[in-house]
Amino acid sequence: MGKVVVVENVTLDGVMQAPAAADEDTRGGFTRGGWAVPYMDRVMAETMGKGMRGDGSLLLGRRTYAHFHGVWADRTDGNPYTEVLNRRQKYVASRTLAEPLPWQNSTLLRGDVSAAVAALKKEGDLVVLGSGVLVRSLLEAGLVDVLTLSIHPLTVGQGTTLFAAKPTTMELVEAIPTTTGVLIATYRTTA
Image (cartoon, rainbow, N blue to C red):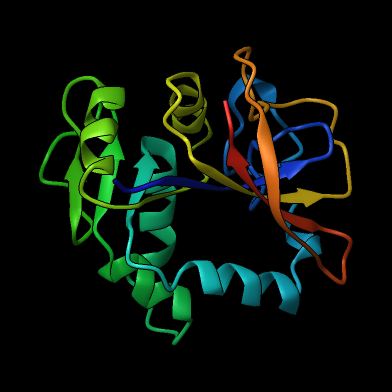
């Protein structure tokens, strides 16, 4: 049985919306996008790079898939993430996309996403990058096994938060501080 591993950037107040760019996700009038960029450092790059070396497939929501496709699919810059993101199998949760999907090794999940993910979990690990709406539904369904949260030392006061109403208990597996004050905390869900 595989695991669902979530990799997410969050602020201290739990916001996960638009960490990479001002215009990444402006839903709900969110104007504070790009908050994670000033906190990138060598420690974060190396730690996240280790996580990208696994064999699991990627599981992405529609917005994250479209954003990543736009950023990574045509890159030839030698960035180690480029090869991993292009080469890996990508499963996409969307009610609006249709096949064929434009990025190589991409498969659209059909029907109930929770049931599809539960079936895929039997085949191996799934790594979810970003995809906050999807992650919230997977947490609600009890399908998340591990969360690796890059917790940034700021609050933004508005935006979509990672955790919904369902209580989830976790145990800390590892904590790595970066030179910029980000804490990369890996948790295993326990209930």
